[in-house]
Image (cartoon, rainbow, N blue to C red; front, side):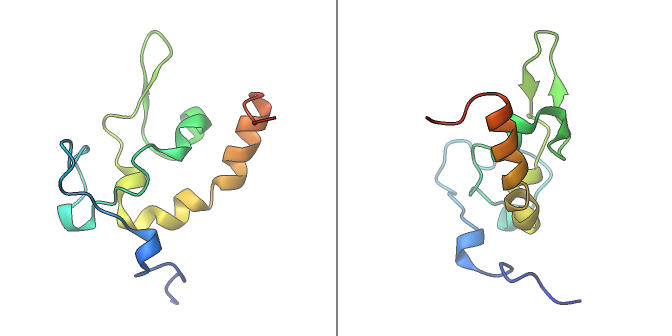
Length: 97
């Protein structure tokens, strides 16, 4: 199977080991922990993000136990959701005017 074109590219991976919170989620090996999506762009997709969020009683999405955007192998998944993110933002009337 052919590797994705982004695999091994510097633009697809960033790590900040000096961050006070590094690593901020468990479940990803430190060498493969990707900080590129520190603020997860999938958040706006709610429960359809592909991760494993929990919703608190007040409706707030809690991603504490989700490492999906921080796994170096998931760059393609995250960037592959940009059309869905744009649609969700438009549906929520959050698109800049």
